Length: 333
Image 1 (cartoon, rainbow, N blue to C red):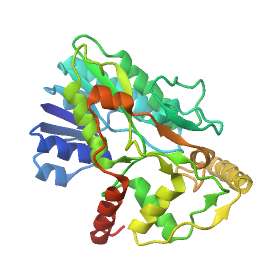
Image 2 (cartoon, rainbow, N blue to C red; image 1 turned 90 degrees about the horizontal axis):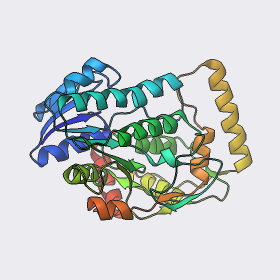
Image 3 (cartoon, rainbow, N blue to C red; image 1 turned 90 degrees about the vertical axis):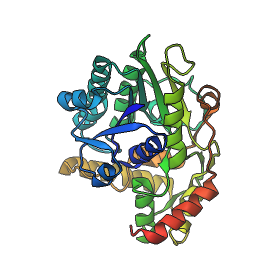
Image 4 (spheres, one colour; image 1 turned 120 degrees about the vertical axis):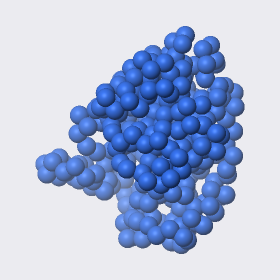
């Protein structure tokens, strides 16, 4: 396999690069930063953005498989920035991949593309769930637009698939884990009322393996061609239980302080207003979207991924936490 991985210097992208190398693939990455550690592994690195047509074109030359992992992630920021990275970047890469003769295109999406908002629980939904008419975040909206482009591009000589891993976590440069630990140590985490809804998560190695399995299965007429799949551990847990396991792995204490839903909503609305007035680029400590995520269930049926991709979660949450704790002992956050 001659593979391109966009965002290969990131958390999931880096894990995928290492997995591909272990499988004997020839790997090139397209990333905005410089990553000497990847070059040391024999990875060809092109520095640039997927929003740049020239960079995307150079990156796709002589590649047979494209893994599009790069994205602008977050719950705050300008729509234009999300559009350029997620929609325009995906369109550029699709065009470049097809023009260069690539046969397979694996897109990293998110379950947020079907999240209905409005405080509604998402419990055990499968891929039949429709895209909502309206989105609560620019991230979800632009990722949905990008996913539609990817699935529509599936053709006889160009096979595409979209994966929707949920809350990818584990050892390494994981922004979600780092944020939870930092806020926990600072005493800035609060439970919201008595909400403790079920969520599912995806261990980093399983998320990377799902991409490898999708590439291995993907070909014209394959069951997965032109389709999207939810990816997770298949083991929903109460959300604050997961947070407390992460804090315990870092040697911290569980979250016990509580904020009422009404107070949390008022705080999130006030913060959003202040951040908009200040035209701040940083993300507020709490947004209405994040509040919804903390007070609703969101877990998914992964039966289709098991059936069509041969995906089977290999790491239980407890084992993942043990690995995280071991990594944290030797790495300062």
